[in-house]
Image 1 (cartoon, helix red, strand yellow):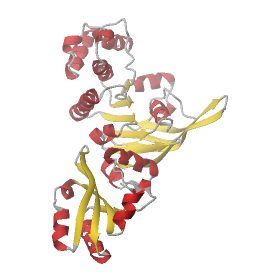
Image 2 (cartoon, rainbow, N blue to C red; image 1 turned 135 degrees about the horizontal axis):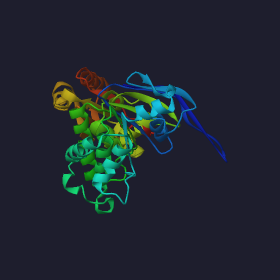
Image 3 (cartoon, helix red, strand yellow; image 1 turned 180 degrees about the horizontal axis):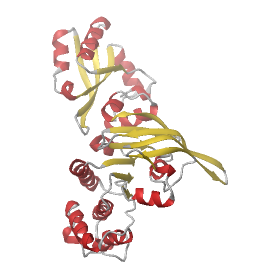
Image 4 (cartoon, rainbow, N blue to C red; image 1 turned 120 degrees about the vertical axis):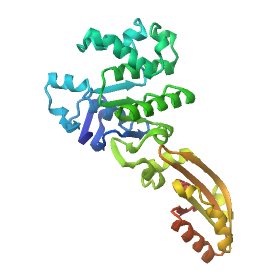
Length: 345
């Protein structure tokens, strides 16, 4: 549905050039919700603005539903953009226009027949749950309501693709969840492909089918969300995963416990999270598992959990226990001193 091929983008500043994108390639399947996550300055905002050519890449192409929009004429690009909705962190609403007019005016400007405008505005205000706010002005709305208006405005053009540029980062946690639920509803009911950027792990784990991790203008890791975050390879990915579980042990504690056994990080998903594996281990092998820290969170499709466990016992028995857990589909990794990045990876 969205195919980005070898995007590069460089900005020239007084202090030299900034390579915002470095040979970035990405593919999003039709009907998928795909998230791009990265810290500030990673290049993700530049990337999403290049998808609809609000920013023009220095090199590379982007195809949407088989059409290379980087090769279109100005008129062709204008037509193509009507099928690419976009929502922003700052809402971008007309302050002096009512909720109704914030949706209706862009439709008028794009030539939608007058007879269709009211039907579309009413339909999409109902979908975002703001039918009773159509005569209100933006100043009378909460942040979440403003974002819902922005989403209704984007949907009113009946796009095939929806781009989201940090759409929830200015919202409180409860409002963020309500907007994410709305995006899930839109994706499910209309089959709209959604590409979003964020710096919030909660957004990725809540609604995304796939994810790409960006750093310094490059994609350092990408794939299905469940695969990327259960077996992170790059240090930046590991930091984002760590932010979910936040296991913390001092080197003194690790050193002390390591004298009587091993500290093992366990990761489990789906059916493996439902099995009493540690209870079985305690009966089956001559080891004593002690949970030091743990949490289970819900990804879009299945639960994902992480435990930090001290296995007290002889090394041979501990290794048998670890092998057993791995055979149950649980990922294991030993936690060592001075290896902060590995503590929950």
